[in-house]
Each structure stands twice: as structure tokens, then as C-alpha cells.
Image (tube, rainbow over the protein chains, first blue to last red):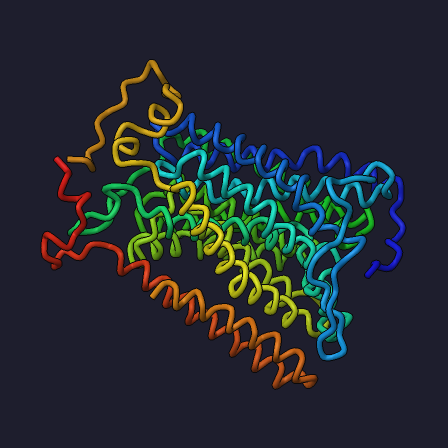
Length: 428
Length: 73
């Protein structure tokens, strides 16, 4: 099946999209810094190198395999109940002919490359201090070659989720301009699968008593990462609106304001909640709150008003510290970077909020079906694939490697060779 | 337990898809989609519960807590 002719794309939109996409990697940089800062000092170099390795593996796997399935120009379709179900792209192999494609199609592929690099990075922080580099790279390849392309096609490439509006009168179909589903929820659910398979860090959940607090080693990395992420997110949401919603350039200022308001409201909410609960605001949770607001804005910044953006951010900011605590204390899930809360839960909330506030009848149901797909299909699929990868390339480092730190064990040298690394109390 | 939960979750998605195909009217369609989502939530809860079961219990006998812990200094 061939999609209808693409909408006209002005030269202004092209230039704006390209410029914004060149800024978008700052969001990836910010998250990589946050992941590193929230891990231990003895795993810092492995964490940052791992971010680069996973991005490299992901973009190569996407170029070789995934881009074919993600393609929006041609598709595999089957008929069910007299409706077309567009389930996978059928693009040319190895990106052949990309140079001759329309400008919009080329930008869409660039957006997808950046998105896949971002998505595979998110679970890396959750596996900090015990997830082996080679296993992380193998998982990134699997995500980029198989899971991300299908999701990207369903949502951005005219797949069955995007066509819910045309086929079943559900609003404009599933909407996700900024990658809340394709990047953040996919990354967050992958993080949950990694935590389930790799297990918790040694000493995190002792035999008796509460879980052990293992604070991040560098709050400055974490907070600076938040500032970098803001720039990247602004670019990401605006470029997504131009490319996937065909918004006019005149709509971009409101989208940027909505993104900023959502992050600001989320930070204010997390700051207040942690101040109220612990007596003092918690820096790492506030950073997570800021990111949660940005993630929620990815889904709905182009669809809501500024006041609604503040509401979306407030809810994300209140949920973040409560859910981090719930996962760790009640559910025994050891997630050092908080990716499950920040990316999966806030992404899902943003997608739902987009349905609530979008002025189209049936949009909420379309968003709920998209959420059901993420939970009901993507999570089990990712878990199964990671489980298979774990059989071939074990995720978890051996106990000795975890004791001495991932830097020494995997790289042969630490990130801070002049610093004395203290003995970890949890090993006594 | 974890695998059972993960198997239940796609069943919830199938309910959602069946709802949009079988019910053109908005009310029953929305009700069935929400039921599908509830099934997924139950599957997720079972999977999470299965993961919690892996945490060593303070009341478990020493030999049942895993070899790794016994090797600790």
C-alpha cells in the first residue's frame, strides 16, 4: 500500500525543522549526564561511554534493519472487518534512495534516528552499576531493529494507530508529536524489563529493614543535565509538531511556552512535595520532576493551552516523588535513574492528558488505545526480547565486578583516578 | 507469576481492539476499551507481584536465601 501524497512543506518549515533537529541531541546529552550523575562514582565512565556505545549501535541497527519497517511511504497492510490494518513499513533496504526523497521524508528519517538514539539510552540509567556494556549494546540493537521501528511506523508512519481516526472515527488517531510514546514510554518500559531481568544492586534490598539509599555521585551532573535537556526538549517538541502534526511555524512559540510551563510546574510540584515529606527539597527527585514535566509535554505541548500545560506538569511533578518511593519501598524495583517513573509513567500521563484536552471527539479513546498498545504489546515484547538477549549475553555483571565497580571491571580504569573511592558500606 | 502477568497483558490489548471493531457506538466501545485496559493493569500487577516474590524474605530459612548472600563477608 502507498500512502497518499504528503502535505505541502514550505521552505520555512524545512529550515526550521532542520535547525531544531540539530538542537534536539541536547536532550539526549542531558539525559546521559543525568544517568551518569545518578549512578555511583565507580561506574561513571562506563555509564557515559555506554551512552555513546548504545547510541552508536542503535543508529546503525536502525539504518540497516529498522528504517525499512519504520518507513511511512509504503506499508504492509492486512484487512480485518473491512478495515485496512497498516502494521509495518515496507521501505527500501539500507535507506537506498533517501537522497532523492522529498525534504519532509528526509527530515522524518533524521527525527527517527535521533528518537531511536534517545529511546535506547533511557533504560541504560536504570541498569546502572550492574548492566554489562555488551549486553546493553545488544539490547539497543534489538530495540532499534525491531521494536522502535514498528512503534514509529504505527504512530508516525501512517500505521494503524495513526489511522484510528480515519478507520474508526476516533479523533485524529493516536497523537504523539514529541515522541512521548515512541521514545519515552518505550524507553521507560524497557527500563522496567531491564530491572526485572538484571535484578537489583547488591545491598539495595537487605534481608531486614527498609531498602538501602544509594545516592547518585554527582548532583551537579544531574542538574546541569536538566538545563541541557530543556533546550533539547524545546527543539524536539517544536520539530515534532512541524513534522508529524503539520503545524504552521506560527504555532511554535506556544509549543515552546507549553513545554517550559510543564517543566516548571512539575519542578515546583516535586520541590513542594519533597520539602513537605522530607523537610528539605531533594535535588535528585527535583531533577526527576523537571524531566517528568518535559516528558509529559512531549505528548501534549502541541495540543494544549498554557494553563492546561501547567496542570499537566503539576500532576507529573506530584506523581514523580510518590511513584519513585512506591517502586523502591513497596515494589522492590531498583531503578537508580528513576526512568520507569520519569519516562514511562509521565509519558503515559502526557498521552492521556493529550486525549483529555484535545478538542476532537473520540481523541481520548484513541489515546487510551495507544496506551493499551504500549502496555499490552510493547512491554511483553520488550521483556521477551531482552530475556532472549540475556540468555546469549548475560545482562548482569559478576559479583566481583559489581563490588569493584563497572569502570575498573569493564574499562580497566576509573572515571576519577585521582580520587579515593571509599568502601561501600552495603557490602559489610 | 511474572510470566503469567505478562501473558495476560496482550489479552487486554486484544479486548481493546475487539471493542473498536465490534462496537460502533461510543458508550459500549469506551466501556470495553476500559475493560481491556483494566485487564492489562491486572496483568501488570501480577507481573510486579511476581518480581517482588524474588526478594529474599527475612523469615525464610538461611538455605533458601540464595548462595550469593551466603558468600558475603
